[in-house]
Length: 258
Image 1 (cartoon, rainbow, N blue to C red):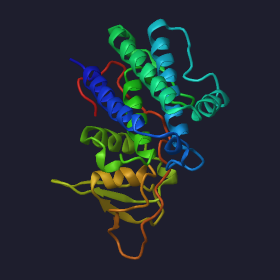
Image 2: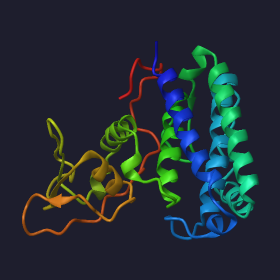
Image 3: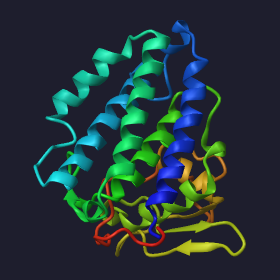
């Protein structure tokens, strides 16, 4: 047994939660601003629909060996979102449901060996196709919260929070870090050290796993984060998603991840 069934289940559950939220949005609510600057809620839903299309391209690439980029270009990605943002509630819902069905079918039918095929997003690094499923869960959970429609970081599942914190650390931008140390409060606590590189005096912070992830992803202003060493305010977080996938992932789907 590999991690594929568990990730597929996470995608299904996250999709169902998103669809339930989307089904309750009126035309006025869809055209209202989301939590993402410059985007309405309609932009967020259009992005999630087009993201499903893009990740289907990557699964096809891994399956066939024929290069099929996630998006033809950055301009094409932007145009797809803009074109779909103003759809009616029924059109948004149908678009999301259609993408979810097609993605679920592709996951079920993907040959076992194809999960090790190497693909990439618009930016490096290359990563194995099984990590496409991790990326889809990330898109669903983060952007569901971005809707500002009743679902937020406090609703993120524990498995998602644990994995995203792992990948944040695995992809840490040391040269752009704003902190030297983060302590994840829990039982037991877990401390990430040496995050700021050498020769810089940076604060150490602490918070619960959900609060830390919300802060690191820019989905909070630092609520629940406290500075451990005196003399510092809670800093701005370092750049999130500096890499779309951590380096050094195993090619074959692992039994569990992380």
